[in-house]
Image 1 (tube, rainbow, N blue to C red):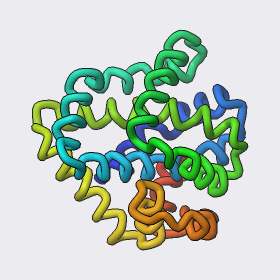
Image 2 (tube, rainbow, N blue to C red):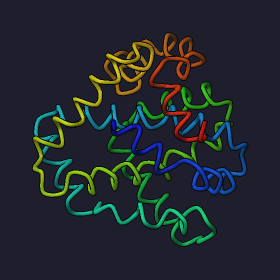
Image 3 (cartoon, rainbow, N blue to C red):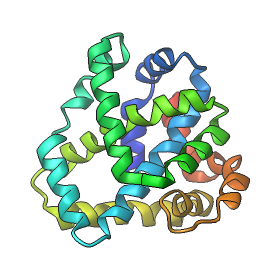
Length: 207
């Protein structure tokens, strides 16, 4: 099972319903937003791991701060524990700053365009998802070393690009390999129509 499938499985069903409640948004729209955001987050991590010392920095961050325990706390974060939710969001803001930098607005714009969520909702969604993705990597690759983590991220990126050319092109744009922002928005509506996109959305919405 791919990383995207596993993450979608962890965030689907009742968990997605709780997240939609936290955001005050429609369940299907939040599902589309998550399905658009997860490839962007993994693609950005793959890009950063290719930078000088990027793989070791990512492995250190995962080993130090992301042991995967957040995956056991999703019920608290999305179920009304305001402190847990605030901590996750604050940590997520820091992650997004390192991950996307000045590219964050176009990531948010693409997720908004794909899902139909408002900009305000998307700006709350991404910080909640970011530490979950890092926690997932921490649990999956604990003790595997920086090169294994980087290699697996690249393999996931390559798998998505092979299985779904539309989603692959969007990942390239989101993680900074292509600065054609206009093309990104043109493709946003088709993001979830390919094989991989439909799979992710189906996992999230249980369809």
